[in-house]
Structure formats: structure tokens, C-alpha cells
Image (cartoon, rainbow, N blue to C red):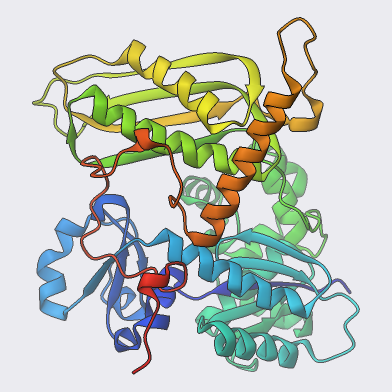
Length: 428
């Protein structure tokens, strides 16, 4: 029987904060989105208070004071580094690994001649010991069942299983039916709020009812994706393991500003910074971009202020992943759409028309200078290497600025405990 495991970090962002701040253990903690706007992660203590994901922080001020909720600004550099460490440890337990998200990994455990419940506990213990991150392990005969098993492991739905690990393959048919009849259909991977409401309208309220549904009917009423989900709930593995994530077809980089921006000079700095980050991602997947889109907008939540939003796509003469070439095009586009007198709240760029670098044809009539191109590639590779080793932004374009008045608010941001020599944790 196929055995797919999903290992998921518990309350991942909060757990990352707690690794280097043990005083946060057992206390109600939330992690906030960009500009300290909304709740994007909650500890179990906060969940018990009924705080939902996405709630604006300003609406929780009174509750936070009442229950001493601790807020941390999002620290994606820390979370990304901890994610890489966690996935590296997990990858030691199976030859086939698919990193699905920042805090989720699939492993193919098919053919392992051991008790997979015990093996799951070994995974949990080693990840906790080596990284400090608590995880749960769900095992099933398909990816969808593995995700559902992970949910069961978190909620302790199967009392006969070890804490934090659930293997649906070890349950009998009657045991599975009883379990799935207790879990509402919205817990199934890919069943969002709107699909859940439509399924409920059809009388499908539990996982078991969806599992028993006609695949052809679900395909006609919804789409082939949900039909595959039903097949996967019945143990038919339709989603194969992907050892290498497919390259992105578009790369976007954007942020809301910490305070209103009025001047073109400040917008230039922000757009240059976003372009630099996107170009780094582009080179990482060995692609080039043929176009770059730039956009700006004011704050739509302040209707009493003058509103303006606009964007433009700049077609590049030659596809590239060179930061400086992309930045030149981005600033050209920004200058075309910028208007004085507006309080800009957000800007961003998107790289489009992506293709693998080796597939770009050489235009013999465009004045293509191979030595110059090679020098540019070497420069970009050196820039990426230094920033990867010393921290993002160590080497950057002077145009990105120093003061960065447009930067996001992050008044409660923790230190870069693992990526900055000056902020490493000190043992006294």
C-alpha cells in the first residue's frame, strides 16, 4: 500500500519565535502581517480565546490587554531560514521528499518495513531536538489523505494513535468511516469556504459524505480538481510526488508602505528594492523575464482622500535576469504612471514572460555582446552569493536608499537570530 506522510510545523511562525525566546512558551502569542496589520499566526493559547486568522490587530487591543497577548511583527527572514533547517532534517527520513510550503513537507514512505507510527515519532523528536520546531505527522495512501491525517494528528481525533502522529492506513474500513463521519468537509485539502457552502447545500457536510459522492457528479457540479480530491479520499493517488517544485510563471514583489509616500524619489527606492528581490528569485530558478509590470496605488480604505491607481507593462528589448536591466525598465515604467499630489500606500512589480535562460535565442543583429553578458552574469552571481552568505541586502543598488521612509512598520520584530552575526543569540 502507498504510504505518503505530511509533516507540518505546528503554529510555525509562532514556533519560530519561541525557539529563541523560550519565555514565550505557554503564553498567548500572535504574529502580525506586513505593517503589523492582521493576525497571520496564532499560538494555541490565542486560538482558545477565539481569535480568528486575519483579524486586524487594532481590533484586538482590548482583548490583548485583558489576556496579555504578545504580538510579534512578521520576521520572514527568520522563518525562511528555520524552514530550510526543518525541511533538511525531515529530508533525511526518506529518499523522496516534496517541500510543499514553508512549513509542510511530503515524504514517500511506501515500502518502509517498520511501524510508521513509531517512525513518525522519530521524525517529530529529531525535528524538535535539532531545530526546536514542534511538528505533527499524518500518513495516508494519497496526498489528500496524508493532509487529512495530519489534521487528525493535530486534533487528536484518533485516540488509539500516538500523540502527534496519525496513520490512516492502520485503521479498518469501519474505523475510517467512523472517523470521517466526525470531521466536517471543510477540513479536506482544497475545500475552501465557498466550495464548502455549495457542498453543504447538496447535503454533503462530512468527509465521509464527500468520499461517498459520485466522482462524475462532483466533476460536473464543480471541476476536475475536486473530482480528483474525491478519488484521493478513496485511496486513489492522483497527485504524484514532485521532488522539484515547478518554476513560477510570474514573480511578484510588492509591499504596503509603513507611511504614505508622496515623492517619486521614495517610490523609486521602493520599486528598486522590489525589483532586486524579484530578480534574485528569477535567477534562482534559472529563468529570464521578457516584461516587467509596475503599479502604484493609494489607500482604498481612506475614501475621503484622493484616489489613484495605475500600472504599466514594459516590454524588454532582450529577456534578462540582470537586476540593473530590470531596474532600469521598472523605473521607466514608474515615471510614466507617477502623478504628484497623491498619498501612495503601495507599489509593486511583477516579472512576466518568463522562460528558461538557456532557451533564449541569440539575436545576431542586436549588437549582442557575449563578453559583456558574461561579465554581467558573473556580477549577478557574485551579488547573490554575498547576500546569501552575509544576509539579504548586504550588497545592493545605491538607488534603494538607506533611510527608507517607505519601509513597512515592524515595531515588534524579533532579531535575525540565525542570519545576522550581530543578532545571534548569546548564551550567558
